[in-house]
Each structure stands twice: as structure tokens, then as C-alpha cells.
Length: 83
Image 1 (tube, rainbow, N blue to C red):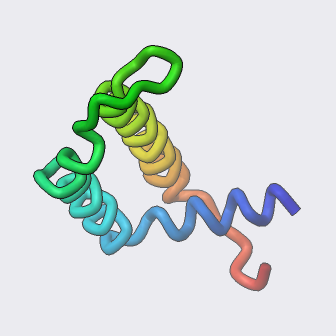
Image 2 (cartoon, rainbow, N blue to C red):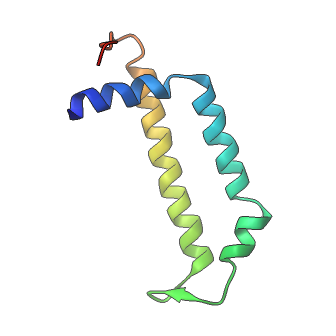
């Protein structure tokens, strides 16, 4: 089951549209409306919300880039089409 899901995810990430969508979402998330939402004096475990927003977004973007590099690295592999 997980092997099939892994192959489907890697096959999907090879499409150019997914690269563009993740770039646009990342660009939108770092602009005014979202920054204003998290620019509050509230804290979670003593850390300001904006600080956590930036660092969690940074970690998620690194994960997405890692998944894209996996998909590009496996682009020559033959994935089962009927799963």
C-alpha cells in the first residue's frame, strides 16, 4: 500500500503544474494578508505567532523541495501505471 502511494506521489510531483502551484502558494503565503493574520501579540510556548509561522513555513517548504527532488531523481524509473 505505501509503495503504491509513494509511486503515485512521485509521479504526480513530476508535472510542471504542481511546481507552479507550490511556487504560487508559497509566494501568496509570504505576502500581506497572511502575514497580517499571524502578526499578533499572542504566543505559543513563549514564541510569537509570526515567528512560528515563518519557521514552520520554512520547514514545510524544505519538505516540499525534498519531495520534488525525489520525483526528479526517479523520473527515469518505470512506475506501474495500473495501480
